Image (cartoon, rainbow, N blue to C red; front, side, top):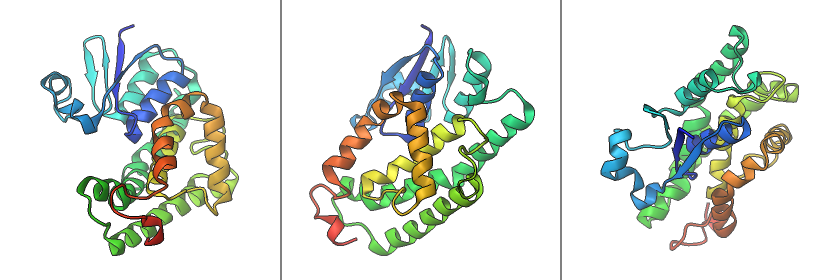
Length: 236
């Protein structure tokens, strides 16, 4: 088995690549890392990942460090079902359309809410900036509206890029799970998004739940509370 996937499953793109490899039947070895433990800062890891980030794949002597590039590379190089990343030019373009859009939308807005609302306050042991969190929540909700109205066409489309699941859906779902650790459920009061997330989970299980187990554990243990600060649910 030559393909290695270096991934910390607390990272959204890292989870997405691991889930993709499992769901698509790509033979690989998951090399687990913990960013919090400094695993991405070792000389050994820096030698293959000069940016010191996850995920990274190593396919024989070939090393790649951007998740979107990984999806495209693996779709070209491995034997997988076409729906994950279609060979047809127009079908592929539909997937690419979301992959390019998500950087400054789903990814950044869900991430920034999670980081400001929970991760950074937990690391620094300081209360969140409530005004900033409220602003980020508003921006994130705008993105969720766009996913429902534009990408899912008010529920008339089952998947982001067409009638079958693709890598766009894996990446989207992993990003949409992240705010749950900060106490925010993107599915709440959103039947379209709720049905979509349940559909993706059903399509990808048991891999989806297994790879997200650490996220579920943090979500269920703290419920959005910030360890060592206060019961943040009462204040935010």
